[in-house]
Image (cartoon, rainbow, N blue to C red; front, side):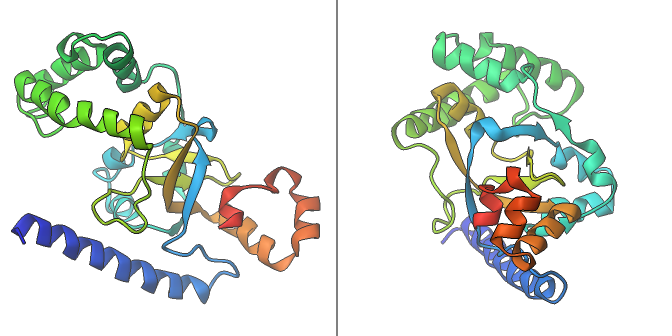
Length: 237
């Protein structure tokens, strides 16, 4: 086993252990804590919010802890950084240009954006120049797109070789996309896929209260109080 693969499996084992310990801690606090291995299958069309948690993790220790932790309950200023998903997603535009219209990567809007980024940063997507970026996208993402076209987005739950796709759940139960898995999500949109398997990075503290009520009120009383949440995936997990 290579050292890189060993580090990957070690990190995955550590994350699973921390997730189980966090679940035990949450059981002492909440009536209905989320299980660390719960995977939701959600409609892509329902993802209407996004947060750049990778960038945010570099702005302070409290944000870094959130970014490095899964299945957490989050309150405070973190949620102020959530933004609506817009049609100005340069990655989605670039993917449509390349995969649908047949435009070469280097001519897409995405790569023009990367070209500007390289003027301001030493590397983009781990690449230090445009030729490296072109090679990366031709060798990795062209292949990934074909895989998704044939197989859809696979679950990571029982496959350690697949990187999980994470979301957050806001106070009202809306889904908030994260910095990870953007390539797969945007490819899924280009392909017209309807659903995507996700794990929970974190839940708003108010949403956790709703989950607790789901446990304590009983189904009939809960549906009467929250009729719009009757079929919410996070309440079925």
